[in-house]
Image 1 (cartoon, rainbow over the protein chains, first blue to last red):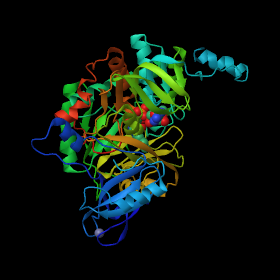
Image 2 (spheres, rainbow over the protein chains, first blue to last red):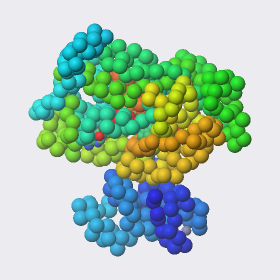
Image 3 (tube, rainbow over the protein chains, first blue to last red):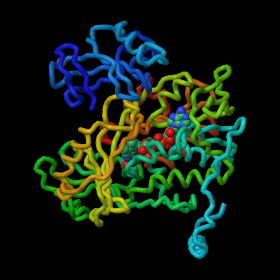
Length: 107
Length: 415
Ligand SMILES: Cc1cc2nc3c(=O)[nH]c(=O)nc-3n(C[C@H](O)[C@H](O)[C@H](O)COP(=O)(O)OP(=O)(O)OC[C@H]3O[C@@H](n4cnc5c(N)ncnc54)[C@H](O)[C@@H]3O)c2cc1C
Ligand SMILES: [Zn+2]
């Protein structure tokens, strides 16, 4: 069972209390963008086997969206952080690198 | 290779079954091939088979990181149907279903195709309208389905409770020639036929990289060294994102876990397949007597081949109202597979940004039924380099162009 800590209310919530929202930090493109840009935002996904940054919503709690770093091959959770950011926090990246020396880093 | 027949069984019975041959060879990889197929699931093996059968291309290797049929092909609940809503889907799934009808004879391998009839229950008024629409669409597509009322459902499925109260059975979309087949046998039958044509099935060999020159594929890096190829077909289901990354492009695909479970074996009690999409559950009875039950998908990226436990509980809780007699059944085994989900719940059979590299993926929760048709269509795409009538609508450019083949509304459930 997957357990994530909501960074807003501090609740350690298991997955039935949460709603997953797939890849985080997508660069958004709107009107006026090229087809390639819009496709990259709307459809093209990293879908990695390993470290993944993703969106979750504390749907049966405070209701807010937050972000998580998680390994899709082991389900290990590296950490969660508030959604008001366009890139993962540097200390979280360092923590993941320490645990996963072969990881290519956040791209 | 010796053919299987009733005489072969008699002959072997008389000599204590000492004369059966290996069904396929395990060769070492050659330096290069005309076509390499990555992934020896049903779709990869069928692609290779029809490359040989329909196009005479037999200098082919199918490369598999584990054992053949060990991916989703060997993990699914084997439902076969073609009652989809959109025309391109109906075309390829019905092609597959009709090939299944004669597949055992074609491959000289018993795939145990059992067109026992399939019901998709309507348990809300919304579903009633949806399935009536599907029946009309199927009529136009030449796919034989019909709408049946609750009394007919009860007649076909005596163990069902049609009264609810939560999920009353209001009728069903019935496909009389839908059913099941033996999943392993489909992979094994195609593998044996490919090996017979001289193709190489190379197991325990993981593709780790894709090599290219001037934007055209030249081969693959594997755990058994570099293998050259003129054309590459990527047919790896849940691992499509990974192998696409090696080939330098991204897909509109997310990998998630889908699970299934079987009960202890019981006496025959249900001789059709029943799908209850409102509650995300479906059930059939295997030849061994086990009730085979499939449930919903997890909705987060996952490569562990384990699903979340709460889905099992949700599925069974809901199915128990519709099938009260299963409440006392013990469940024997539960397992998961990693399915490749696209946004419109339709597959991708496509050219890719890399020259002479093709991809077949996105069958998600429902590709077992499609194996023969998908292999047929993919072989044409790989052999000619151009999409044919069955594949034209399934190119990956459909996403950027907004031409979705929306089956998520028609079949919003795992199957
Ligand atoms: C629980 C469950 C129930 C299902 N129920 C149904 C159903 O009732 N009806 C239905 O129609 N469909 C069903 N499906 C879906 C169906 O199983 C799949 O769509 C179908 O089997 C996909 O076949 P495939 O050949 O594309 O993939 P797979 O059988 O998964 O084959 C892909 C192969 O590629 C190999 N591979 C991956 N990466 C590499 C690499 N780097 N190098 C070499 N090899 C690699 C894998 O090891 C694997 O063997 C179900 C799926 C699951 C998980
Ligand atoms: Zn919260």
